[in-house]
Length: 337
Image (cartoon, rainbow, N blue to C red; front, side):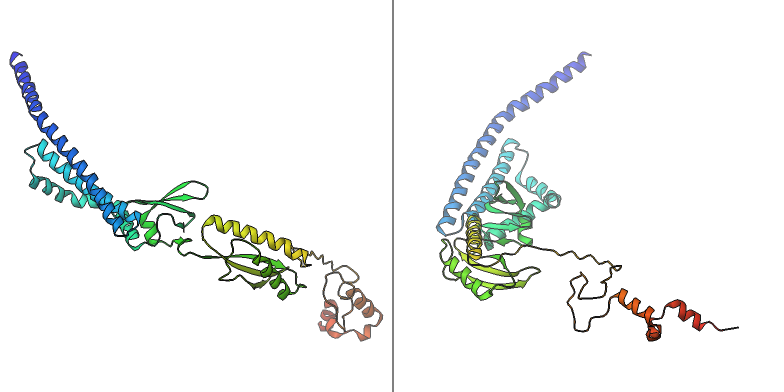
């Protein structure tokens, strides 16, 4: 029992001595890592400064400064580990990293894919920070383009995190890519209204509105002949092309047209429906001068069904053979014994 306790005590003494020996190495390794943290911050600021002088967008400087900072920190971690554990050499460390590189690549495939897509987005610049874009079901302002994802702030003040690979491979509509934007609203007038006069009145009304560009000038086109109205497509341009300006411009245009057209005698029709009830037992059924289905009358209108049956009973000899009842036809075709 004494022998076993002495062996345990000896083992604990060895561990304590190893820990005491490791403490200076640990402190030195921590100091080395702090130094590399400072170097990473300086390198990040230097990359941001160089990118700013080169005229690159803020998003590119942010991403590349982060990448440089991560690389410097990774080197700092490796150097700190070799200081804390002297038996751990750089060759063995890089060998372990090489063996596990394939596993790490498969495990972080999505992260690397989003990282590469984010770099390509920043280099090719299909959109920038501050642009208003539409991606799938989401629309809003680009707040930040990070290494893994892009942050989108919707118009109702919510944040949407979209992976960079999705933005790079799918369709994205950039509403603020150009300094001007064309908008359109649809207005319906009656079929009896003069289209040319309505077009002139709408264009005159738009000239007095603020926020609409004179060049390109607004125009009005006949969009379609609808079920109950002639639909006009009113097109106009605004600058800047942001969401707030677009909504306010459409509001002012629709309000002005709604006030101007009825004041000038133009009709703004609303959907109407006519329900026709067809009853074949009516006495006027078949007579287009009297029936209620709304069919247009002709010069030679056929007789109503009741009048035709009455004439057939009064003059059976003038009955059309093709209009004989089926019972009579079957009776005539039955052979006599």
